[in-house]
Length: 210
Ligand code: AMP
View 1 (tube, rainbow, N blue to C red):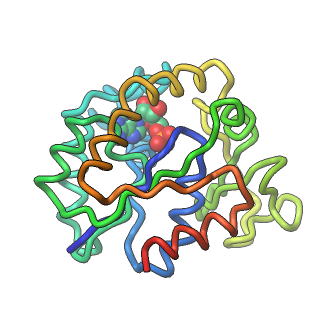
View 2 (cartoon, rainbow, N blue to C red):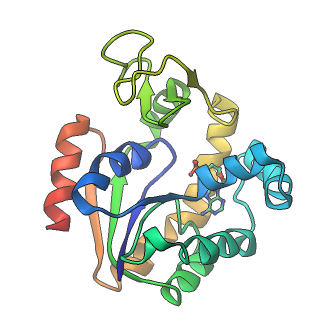
């Protein structure tokens, strides 16, 4: 069993690429952000404790995240590995992950800070199949109709606003970006220029994974 990590700042396109490469790799997408939002919506204890951090654009404490991943990795669909999206985000999370599953590739999708705010503030997802879109850079083909499933229900994340994005970016630089060197030292870190058309990025990621 071997897993892949999609790494990068908020708004880099990790979720978009995860959905696209899921078909080729056969690995399920495991997004800690999606899991936390589901927990918040369900009103679980984890959700209640995570919400304050998420609303403020801060990282949720490591022990909460690691417990979520330990549970998720036990599920049947994870037996051949998974594609992590938004995890790990700190060195303690990466250390915990190393004890849970083998990671074959860390794909870093790089986007300059100056592009992040506009990429995040215009994004929305399908309320039914979770496909990710963007008002300007990646709109639905037919207005108001999801390309993935035909639904006409879309949602925007509460934390996708200009104020929170800046806190999320500082959390990324302070707590998450040191992980690049940690994984580089292990020879599994691959940088991809994420400031290009979505299809080109997908092609490059698939080439790395071949
Ligand atoms: P995301 O959907 O990956 O942008 O995550 C949304 C928010 O959930 C982040 O701003 C954090 O508050 C929290 N979060 C998601 N994944 C993690 C993680 N691996 N470690 C800590 N906090 C996380």
